[in-house]
Length: 465
Image (cartoon, rainbow, N blue to C red; front, top):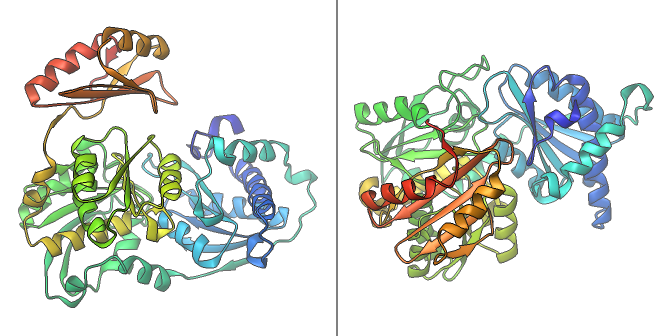
C-alpha cells in the first residue's frame, strides 16, 4: 500500500484506502526517524531538533490521520508540536520560528474531498521530495510496525502561533493600506479551504481593505467548486463577483492556501508569470540587483522585465523543490511559478499564498493604477496556455519533436525547450500520467495557433479540457 501513496513531492491518495490510519502511523514513524537523523547529521543537537511541527487542513479525514501520524512520531521518540488547523505555509513558518527539525502538513491541497496526504518539510522548512528524503521515509515506513515497536513516549503539545504568523505576514503589507490612507475592495474565494481560516485571522482588520468573501465556510470538508484555481471553471464565481462588486481585484486560493490566482478589475485572469514580472519591479526597487527565480514555462517578458528593472533572472525547473533550492542557491529575494506558488527570501525561501496576497495588495495600493493597467506592460507576447497531449511513448515523442525543428535552440533543463527568434515552446512529461504538457509563446495569437498545430502533430492526441 505504501507504494500507492508516495508521489514525487509528497504523500497523497484517497482515504481510507489506500491512505489509512495504519499507513499514517507508519509514515509518522518513518518521518520522525528521517527528520531527527537529518538534524543530527547536520550537527544540530539543540533540544528543539527532536521536535516536529504538525498542522492539518479542514478535510473530514484530517483529524484521524493527524492522530495516527503524530502517534507514530511519538512512538519513535520525537516530540510533536500540534499547531492545529492551519494553511500549509503556516507550517513552514512554525518550523523556522520554533527551530524544529521539520514538519508535516496533513492535506491533499487541491484534490477532491475524499483525498488526503502529507506535505513533509525538513529543517528550515526545506522540501522533502522523492530525491530529497521522501524515498528514505518510504523505506523507513515499510520497516515500521506498531505491533513490534516499543513506544518511546515522545511528548505532544499544542501551540497557538496565529499572532506570530499574522505579524510575520503583515510585514509584507503596505502601511498605506494598514492605516487606511489607501483603500481597496477585493473579492477573495477561499475555495472552502484553509484560506477561510487564514484570511480572517491575518487580513480582517486592515483599515484600507474591504474584503468580499466567497466560500469561506470550511467546517464541512466539502467544496462548492474544486479547490484548484488553475482550472478556469473554478474561477467563474470569483470573476462574476469582481464585476458585480466593482472590485479592484479578485483572488482565489487552493485548498491548503499555498497557491493563488489573481484576476484584475475587469475579471481577466492574470498569468502567474506576468504577476511575477509586475511584483519583481517592487522587490527590485527595495533590493537592487537581486536575482529573481522563475519557472522555465514563463513568458519571455518576465526575464526581460527583471533585467530591465536591474535584477538577474534565474531560470528553474518546474516544482517547488527546485524553485526553493534555486532561491537558496542564489539568495534570490523573490520567485514565481506558473502554478500559483510564489516564493520569498524573507519567508525562509518558502512559498506562501498569504504573503503573495499581501504583496499583490501592496503593489496595487502603491501603483494607484487599475490592476489591468499595471499588468499591461508585461503582456508583450501571445501565449498558448498549457495544453496536454496523451501519448504512450513520451521519450519518442520528444525525440521526434527535436528532429522536426533542427534550427531551433534546444534546452533540456526540464523536458524539451525549443527556441527561435520569434517563438519558443516547452514540452514536459507528466510524472504520473501518459501525458506531455505543451506551453508555447509567439508574437501574436494567429502565429501561436499555427505553431501549436505544427508542434502538436509530434505529441500525440490532444486532451480537450
